Image 1 (cartoon, rainbow, N blue to C red):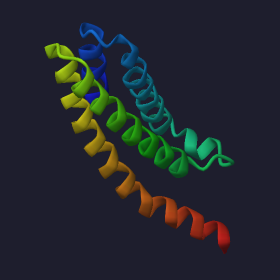
Image 2 (image 1 turned 90 degrees about the vertical axis):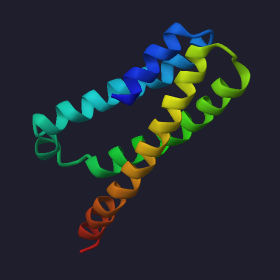
Image 3 (image 1 turned 180 degrees about the horizontal axis):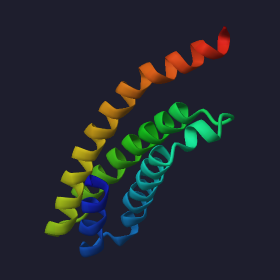
Length: 114
């Protein structure tokens, strides 16, 4: 949800170059939601689904943090500031996400060692 709101704010702002990152994160979140609903993780055993989700959260947190700082400091319009604030909230949400997923990834990797 935050990715879509941030995307809409960047569309309305004077910083349209930053709208790609929230759009991609929104689409990736929809893909992972779809994959979980269709239980693709059971069908495609060769992929490490928890690790892919972990890496998505880590990269999203870093990218959102960087573009939010840039949007807030470089652009002065209200939509850019709002996108930056929502980007900071998204950074926190993704950081919590990769912290919570870390336990699942550690369990998955321990199973591979046995």
